[in-house]
Length: 393
Image 1 (tube, rainbow, N blue to C red):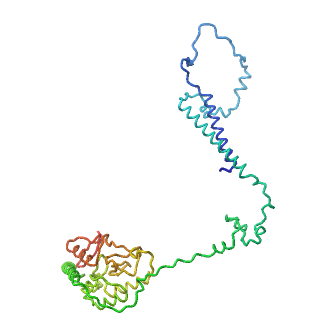
Image 2 (cartoon, rainbow, N blue to C red; image 1 turned 90 degrees about the horizontal axis):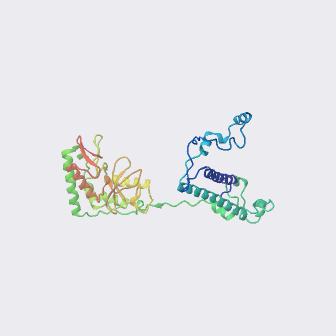
Image 3 (cartoon, one colour; image 1 turned 45 degrees about the vertical axis):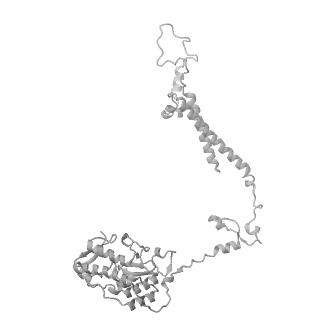
């Protein structure tokens, strides 16, 4: 409800003004002639040959020279202003629909003002009765009224800053003053594996033959087009070293990764040549995989999500490559597909914008791109001055 008395006076004045304008315009606007009625003559009256019409002089008499001078010097009033005079000047008569619409809106405005005024009067009579008659004796100070109730009374400062000046129970005050306990972060169990003895596991011979086949394609292309990168390929790894890394990380390396490490234990670059790798990453050795896994688990050893694949890092991942800026190429030790981590974001399992379902699939996609001049997702391998480089076209 509107409680401002000035606003009510403004609404009432607006309604009165609308009604007055409508009344004046209706009283000054000539209505069209009725059917069968002779229209009023336009222009000056026609000249007559007979005697002038009766009476020969104005009924009130002919004004004297003093009368003319007195009315001629009358100061201009509000209605003499050109804009006001043009507004109240005779206009063309409004058609029937327009006149009815104007009357209808005027009646609606007047009804709204009367309805709002009546509601305000009713509210004042029912809900505000006796509000102005309250005395200080009827409302003693809070401390006096609640001396034995065990409550805290609001001070003048509370009222000044807009806080409720109502008594607050002591129990509620204590509960509000206590800060909620901090949520306990879930520990990443994959980053704290159990101590286990190294165990060398056998690799399926079919997997070994498939991995070696793709490596031979890559090696052949590197020898012919990027010999500098070919010389960075590492020698064969040891099965015992792989077993130790698995025991220390608590992870089970997929067979295709272990077969690849047994053929090339990562790569090692020189001052003049960047080490060979996939999708812009350096191919990691067995020890580098273990050390990078430990480093990432020290940085983030908590579970921030129910899905480890949506976090920035999770201990079940195997970091098989690094681009030197904090980003890693990883393999999910559970689902065996290839992904990548972003040090400024989350993990993604669409490296290069595509799904790579295994480490063997990464080797095959790379060999295909080298031989055909194609791409692996949006990554394109090219030979530049005898060295393999990955670009994003």
